Image (tube, rainbow, N blue to C red; front, side):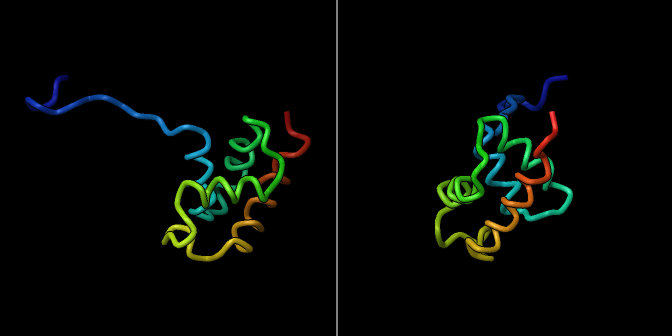
Length: 87
């Protein structure tokens, strides 16, 4: 079904780094395992690297990352640990 004239039906998909940044910033418990799998796909196993990705996407003074690096480091560690030993 076509949309109104001048509308677009294009779909864009976030790259893994952007998706990781969004999941980390959201800090939702239900996203922890997803974040771990997203991090593992490109071989990220260092929580610091995961946090750096989020800050590179959003910036140091961003509202989505207002809780501070230490908070997101804990989330990243939990996510990476959640998928250790899984296929």
